[in-house]
Amino acid sequence: MQILVAVDGSRFTKRMLAYLAAHDELLGNRHQYTVLTVVPALPSRAAAVLDRAVVKSHYEDEAERIFKPIRGFLARQGIEAAYVSRVGAAGELIARQAAAGRFDLLMMGSHGHGSLSGLVMGSVAAKVLAGCRTPLLLVR
Image (cartoon, rainbow, N blue to C red; front, side, top):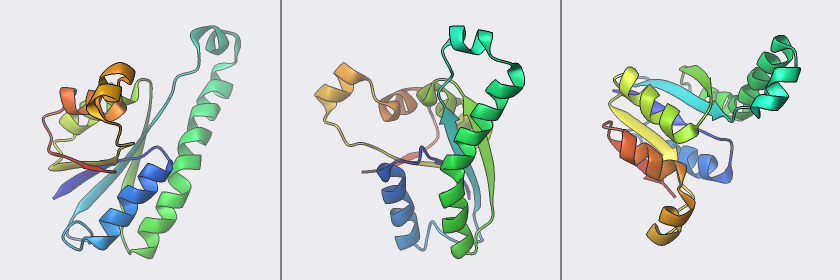
C-alpha cells in the first residue's frame, strides 16, 4: 500500500504518528511511505525583494525543521520514506499530491474543530477532504 503522510510539525502530527505506531496494519516495510509538508508561501512583496536563493533556502529550512523529528521517528520504526515539500496553500497541495501520486491512503492529523468552526474558519482537513478522492484517515 502506498501511504501519503501529510505533516505540519504540530502536536496533531505527533498524535497521527502515535496512531500510526500503534496500528501494525499501517506500519511496516510492506508499505511505501511518502511524507509531505506544505510550507506557507512568503508574502509576494517580501519574496520580491529577497534573493531567490534566500527564499529557496527559507522554504527548504522550514521543511527540514518539520521533517527532522519525523525522520527520527520513522528510522526508529525501521521505515524508509520519501520526503516531499511543497510551497503554497496546504489543503489544495495535499489533495493534489494525493491524486498525482495515486496513493492508497492519505493520513493527517486534524485539530478536531466542530463542523461549525470548520465552516467559519475553513480548515486544511476540510479543504483536503473536499478536493481529494484518496481515502483519508484523519487523526485527532
